[in-house]
Image (cartoon, rainbow, N blue to C red; front, top):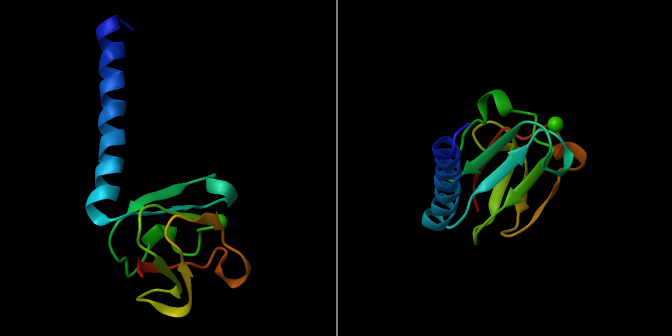
Amino acid sequence: MNNKQIKDLYSIEAVQDLSHEAAATISGGALDLSDKKDGEGARLDNIVNARRSLGSFNNKASWYEVTGRRDWIVYTGENFTGASRRLRAGTKGNFTGPFNNDIASVKPG
Ligand SMILES: [Ca+2]
């Protein structure tokens, strides 16, 4: 890889970081989910709007992180049904009990 290619790679990373930050700033925060505990495994990051279904990520989330200043409500059923839990702004953690591997819709609190 030559110097220009290396430089381009850094630029791409900088842009991705910027969009992550920009998304969080514009929306007041984002919800990140991962399939395995502690942020490991497949991730569904930067959710900024209500999602009536998480699609192929339904019933998979085992961990969450809420960035920014908004709480999020997660539901075990699609369309904001079933059991719900409030995730406080600025927190992260593993889902426990009935919520582990059972989240199917989310919306800002
Ligand atoms: Ca999981």
